Length: 176
Image 1 (cartoon, rainbow, N blue to C red):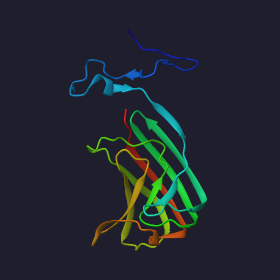
Image 2: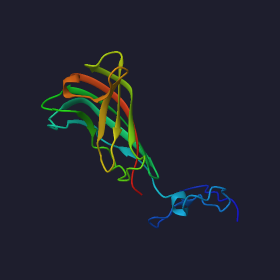
Image 3: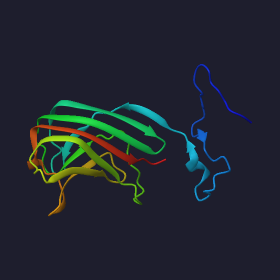
Image 4: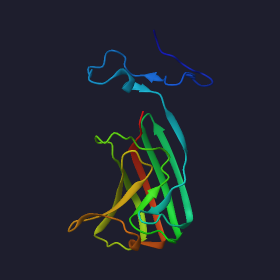
């Protein structure tokens, strides 16, 4: 009937599939479902991002390869840093692989996105920008180059160099 205060320790919900309900009964938005308003998953952790080609995944080696993620409900935000030591035999369009969770298989507006806070030592022009997306039911982020005159094209292995330095964030939904 009132507030709950936990002075010491944790509030533990030991039953799988249970969580904190935000249904309250007074929300004027009644279009959702009660299960969509339950926070039943929170997780933080590390992951190891890597690059792969679509023709040949390759044997790329790295100077730096770090990542962290936070999952809140269905939403995953993963950040990472990769510095390529040697591109090796990577061939084809370049993607970031080993995402910490498989993306949702629901194709209705559930594509995730990739942003870069810094990308250096790539063979792209100053008028091009690097971005990407996470397809459905996948642990792969496909990388794109955008430019005003040509639109969007995949980042090709010929545009990746030894010493490439990528700092990125990836946000996507997972299945419930």
